[in-house]
Image: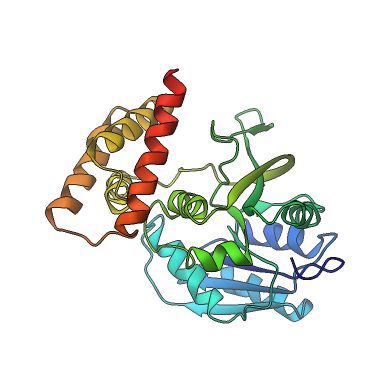
Length: 289
């Protein structure tokens, strides 16, 4: 990273109807021990008080900027949020050490980005970094809700080194973007770093708004990432078991076959797809041994 003493980082926050949580997210951001150089909050077709909150914070903090984006009221995991992220990204230059995609319902510990900067500085091989997700249970306690793969970073709070972000040509506008980004990072020689000491509060339960259309989009994403049928089946079985919903298998596979039938363009090249499949099979067989 070029600046050892003063890391420069940018944050883009897509926000669709987030008046309940956005102020908390922005408070945790403006109270960081290492402040961002620039923040863009994208008001993504909100119909509540999201825009008012953005205006209040941009008046108080000169490094914050708001921008409106017209899209849809429908919750479309992946394509909608990445499209909004790209809207914010278009307002930024490349003079950053790392760039962050942050959800509007996240509360960060105050030293979060100070630690993220240290992790990126520790090795040029680290391309993606982030903390661990915590959510409230029924008793009101914040409990860990992180994937079994501890180096997977939740899409709600991902930080990318500039070299990694450029190498993988940004984020893919598709469901599964926060899986394919890590696979492409590895394809280009970068590693991910999950940081257990950084406890991130996710105020809306992960996947709470997912519906049948979103599950079919997940299957479509597996096709677009060139998983192939058998890896898609295994991944769907795993998701169904974790969420205790057998219909996930049916919905995922329906989305996969619809994409295949319609010859939907892949989001990775054939070489990237081969790398992804080999990596997936290696992990699958590694867990069986």
